[in-house]
Image (cartoon, rainbow over all chains, first blue to last red):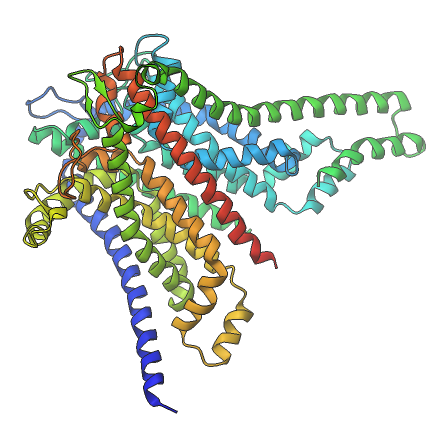
Length: 282
Length: 336
């Protein structure tokens, strides 16, 4: 037989695998490059003022992102409080009651779509129902938009986690005469607590950097404001506005804000993974 | 599971009630308790059902409100809105072609770059990566997916665009092709596509990895057994077996790319022009919304923006629905 065939096949194999290794290297390089430039330029902006002072007026020096940080924390906090129970209960329905029903599969399909749906469209919807009707932007509107993004994440993780619970655990509880609601809340949900908390954490990580749905719901606020009924400063929108501005000081603050968000998101992602891994091993 | 549940409570308590020696409660007390449990369960079912229905209602609400808000624009332009080539808030004339074109071109560029790279990553993670590195490397790719899009856009504007302007674009422009005509601005349709590619790579790669893992080892081992190289196993076993799921993953990436706002808005240049050059600034549906909505004039501008949003929602809904269906079909085969 011709040795050339073997050589060609081997060369082809080497080339293909090398290219695949190269893609992996490119992916990793992109991750490190993005994070490195972000932290290199952004961490320098961290200072006491950065966390304690509000956003500066155009063209002035100094200032910080205190109002944006507080605004983001408040909106994300309320969103988490509202969307966690909604998401968990809907997840319980899908896993325990609606696993075979038509309604269940339609809801599951819709939730999956909402997971990847363009977030700016959600902003449009909330503008129509919660901003245009009251004629002013508000932190509540921003929170509502974030809820619409967070709930599907919590629903899907809760459902997936509950599906991992062995049926025998449920049956054992039923055999003791426990009612369904008790089995769901005190047995199955409890068994996958870690996974559900992971889902909530991932939802928080997802919404903390969401910008598009806040652009015309919470808008922005140059001043410190802790009133959810008024337009509210928030990190992503401030980063966007400041990055597009011509002022050096604003751009520097934007770098700091971007680094802060990246740091939080990475920390949450790592925490969620650690938490979930421990839960699975236990 | 649910079928067991229906019999359990009542049947069990009933049998215990009949067996009076073991139970300290009277029959009446027990049946009262059973009734209470039944009411509680109905209530619980109702509450969980309500919240599940809320998710469905949200989607219908989004569709309905978009249609209602966009109505004035469609009444004014009819279907001509979709084929109108001018978008000029100054003259109060609105047509969607520029934004649709920008959305499609940036997404196409993103997929052209992202699909081969994601494919390579998925192959590396499932076929050649040393076992010990699989988990950390997979996690790294997932972290890339977790980074918010505003960070990508921000990074694209401040790091990628200047680099591109100085070192890459002049080379392409020197070729003299009309596709690359114009001054090297750094920002523009091509840069937006590039940033989008970076964003969707982790999504496509992790779906591809998941479907590649569904290939039964015995199929691959048989191929290795008759002397196939790793590459030949990938080409002749893995890809044919997972084709449907792979296409699903690509569609998922496409859905993401079409609707992505911030990563694009930072670097596309936000010009309402129909540009033939890839280096010219343009606008996508999402970036038009992000830029103009907060300052739009209620008369016709806002309805037109809502109409754009509706278009985007419908397009992404179809693409994502198709993606989900294909991925489900692709992974269902794992059960054979």
